Image (cartoon, rainbow, N blue to C red; front, side, top):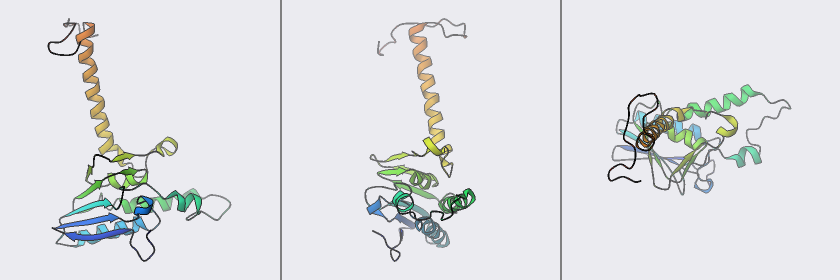
Length: 205
């Protein structure tokens, strides 16, 4: 377990690369109130080092990052508002600071690479997708479960890397179904062109 004396983000350099390691392995590198600021400081440190050409972000232990540590906030009440009336502006200001810290990866003057293994979920996906490039291990799982309740992720970065891949997959799926329609059902609706039906040569029936 990390303490105030232990960094939640380890920093080391070798071979012209800065390695930033999320360092709460006992909590699957869940985000506490210290990690976002330490991550931003590490990115600034790497950008200021002329010997660093690229920044690699990774997670210690079994996962990249399991999202915000709900044990701290939901169970222990860390960061909770003491007033009887919840102030959405205060909540927004806290989350904005976190996302601004994550976005130091996106705004970095040097390339940033997320090296993802295990889970990169919820806030962990926000961190990973703020990098220029995401390299995922075979066991990697990425997702944003709170979208079912809260909608768009706080950084909105799913729109860029993940949304584009999804649209490409949808386009490929549409092309596949269009070819299948032509092979099996005859003329393409609206095209006015007769097409061959039946089994394609060498293809499945």
